[in-house]
Length: 326
Image (cartoon, rainbow, N blue to C red; front, top):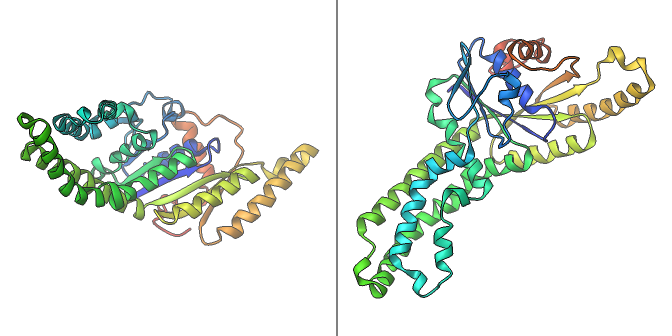
């Protein structure tokens, strides 16, 4: 993988259309893979092609996937949760704490918090990265995007870092308790080793994902209005600890050629110009692309290609990928 591009921003800003149009353009030169991380996928609708859990070829050089978080969580977390249930069952802690049985029963992928289910999707970034030149991730709206960026580091710093080290002491204690309560069901050493191997494997994956995110090109999509712009500022501030913000897209700007056709458009245009100037000043060190309101619906490959030409009208493919400065 030459580059990982992350598209994020407030819901309803046109982020998925912009990420799809960018993938269509870049795939003219680079083998490109676009992944939807939004739990309410829209790439199938935008490309007008059925996309699912399996990688789907969109065009000669463009591939897409819309993974189901529940299925991915089952695949990636199911085995280690199963081993944890077995270990806790063998310890028979429910004899002392009856409510422990409920905890054990809840240790299943379907009961994982949504934030953790989202982050299991990050494996899609690294699992086939050598097959593609460019990987584009269409992230969900801001709050879920925060969870996606933050969780791999959380895994490293706590869950799979300190927790893994702590487990070396906890598991022998569990063996001792188990042997006292149910001598016939001592937690076997090979089960402990297997569990630790699973945890180390997860940690290695988290290390790789965390590194890819740090090296990635984050691009935030916004509208030129107060709520969207302020959320973009918050997102940029948060993201700087996890990845590299390279570009801002200001979407749905009223074309100057029609601003004088009505008082309504003049007023709307004045508001947009105010916030557009603010964004230019705030992100003067970033690439800023300004996209007009489209007179057509950007659905299907031909319309997405047309949209990309409007978005990147003065840019080469390498400049759109930000391999080169515009």
